[in-house]
Length: 350
Figure 1 (cartoon, helix red, strand yellow):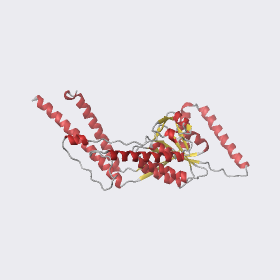
Figure 2: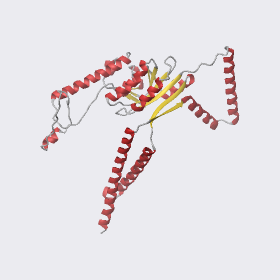
Figure 3: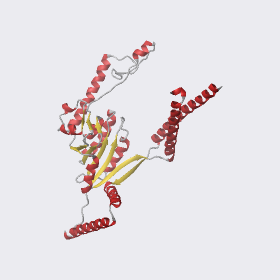
Figure 4: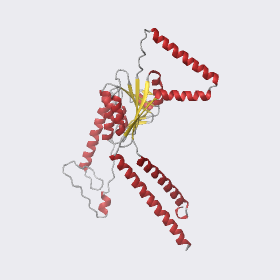
């Protein structure tokens, strides 16, 4: 009886886990469906100068005594008064507005999913940027992914190039493959000393289960209209002719990639760098894949000294149902994790 009781408890826990997993899948599917049909984006703008000044002021109030703070405030007022007097002496010429730097972030996955909000930011900035005075900085992080997806993302940056707007790409961690396709559009590429750059190549891979199916007498047919409609398949029998066509397509894509980079980075020896290899920051500088070594934080901090710097970001707007769904999903995930840890601690799962 004790065995049956323990087995019943174990079975109840197992059923609970299965139900929880199904709930997670259902919630994720429902949220994805809602986002596709009722997607709304909201814009967020933040002035970086003011944020850095606020950080500095908060820190100074913590580390300086009252006398030092008073002296600093007095010095600031004196400086501002002198600047005002200087402008007045120059025939009351109004102060010229500072140049502006617009910062846009792109964090890429294999599908370059961020392009949906990225394109909105590009369109918005293009409507206000002064091509003669302003600059656009894209903080880029991506290991690359699908060719057509990153082709679209790079084309968004090309819009700045066509409009004659100064464009700088800052890479702190990685801009490889499709990520570098985006970065090379910029007039200047700034990378941190150990950022991963390059990987100018094309890769494709897929499993093939034909021999396994044949072993079990299972037929799989692929019907096509057009000689090259399907070259390699996962379940069908692949031919040498199809394999060569597939390789030919990869090589053609690689040539397009090389031409794209060479056109935008003429200083690069494209045959030397387009081998699929990666270069860390300093090595990338040696082969002209980047123009300068520093972090995006350092670059923008220096920009704040001469310009007004604005971060422009678009995000998918979440309704109450979406937020509730995410909260429920997280709660279920935690419950599943606890159950799994209990299973691992029980006698049957040691």
